[in-house]
Length: 228
Image 1 (cartoon, rainbow, N blue to C red):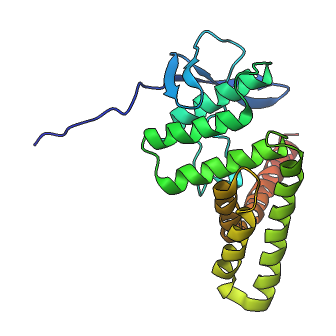
Image 2 (cartoon, rainbow, N blue to C red; image 1 turned 180 degrees about the horizontal axis):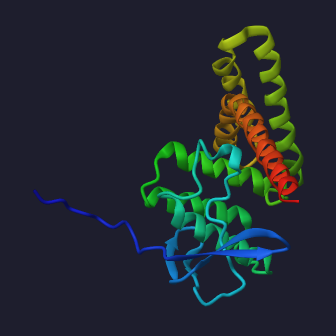
């Protein structure tokens, strides 16, 4: 029995380092081999392995959402390229905007075989970050967080009033609200509909994480006390 293997693109070779500083451990992930991709938005993009000031944080997914999308996966190469484009934009490269970097991120994900749901969720996440940072103009900088608060508030009201039937009922008007985001109508619809469904589970994960984290701190404190 033979198995055919098809490589979608060049390998991404990374180096993971643990750095001890001030009594705490931080991680640094750097590129070992140049990553070269082509994007219809940005043209040829080369992420150089020789650039010592650049480090990637892989997919910048908050810990409480990693049950939805992980930091690594098929989207890894797109995430590294996205980090590099943001690094360039943050250091004065005016040829690539944050909005362009987001579009290139989505394009590379789709070309690398990332499924539709994951790619759109990740595009929605980076679009929100770009909007809050001012990358889509002043109106979006205010409108995006405001519309997200409206969705969460509507979800709370529906949760109390309608019980377990609320997620699909809130997701539909949330998508309609997101569809009026200037320049980002489809992304806005995906972002707010996803938020309407995901945030209650996120609250449960955050509470669980807080309990686990608190327990760890208590155990460490008790261990120090006993050693004394």
